[in-house]
Image 1 (cartoon, rainbow, N blue to C red):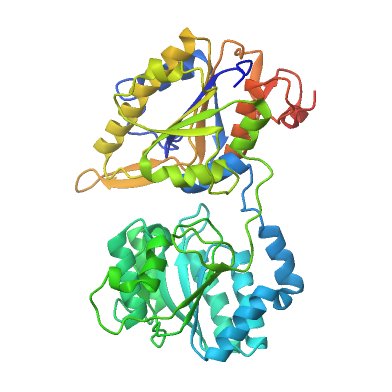
Image 2: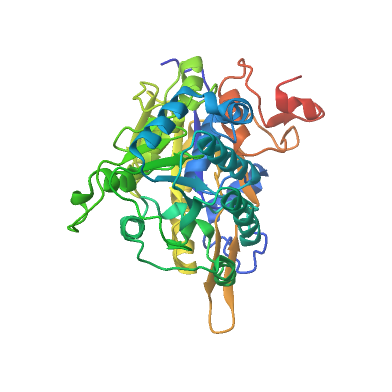
Length: 481
């Protein structure tokens, strides 16, 4: 690998952001002395938070796109000739021939996805598919409230009005899928038995969830009406709009005896999806995810450089997929190392094999204020070691986050801790060649972060960058001088 690229470290504390309240003094020098020091001595700015979790964050970081590639093609197809899609026709014909139930699993997050569901159901009815059950997956998305969810449900219920044999079945949170095997098993059992928490008055359930301030993505499964039981030979269609891992849930459907000793478990199930599902078992999809135009490995190939990502074992498959442009391959331009507290930072950061180092911390799973402080201090301590080495060897250092958490914990009987990192994310750039007063950071988000880093690594390449010279104007964000 050539060494003319400016060696760079990207240090991420995912979940961390700029607290809009900041009333508990959590960002003091006792907790994060190195972050504060770097912010005072170098260019400090903020970028907009557009992600809800680290998976969204890494996908947007690598692809520089808000939506998965293929969404535009789906929009056009649904509006024009979705019923002519060959794979869709084959699936419809198979369901009709077998005369079984069709279970549609769909996200409930915005008007576009609801309209897609409606149109797909309409096309299924045109093809005389009957016994359709819609199971709703709720996501925690910035700007989506329980009131908007209620509106989406009302809109979706109009489908049932027009097509009486289309029913709404189970509701569950997206963050529980495969993240919590116990909850995934509970969901599976509800789907095959119709036994579980039942709320015929969905509006009342929404009011309770809103009062409890429970995140939509974390709600436990419940249902509003019966008749949806998944039985032998039924078909499952996932209208998946994110790269969610359904491995355990799908494995339960296809290999239930691995997880349960129950009798009469459903068998011969057919599983389909809009886009390829992340699962251990291949499933038939209507669309193929096309490779993104931009992603980290492609940048590394263009610069003839190599990246090392330090993260936890469970994140490697996802990060690898996103950094390879949504491809599950092993690239010679990308390596991984397990992130641990006692890593020999000087040896790692000076390894001549790599030109880009990405440190991946995450505070999203903290359960109380003390744990949050401890995790921030732990990450800050390693950041200090990385920053020291970057200064010694004249490397560039970027510090940021890919999404922000929102937490509320009881402090005592009358007070609560409120942490809200969901609006703005910090961006600190420590580089001898980037000087306060001479350069500045344009408005942007995580979509702009990776090309900005790569542009700083190789000035001769025409990547768009957040970093601009003073008085260059707004067009500088597009690389126009």
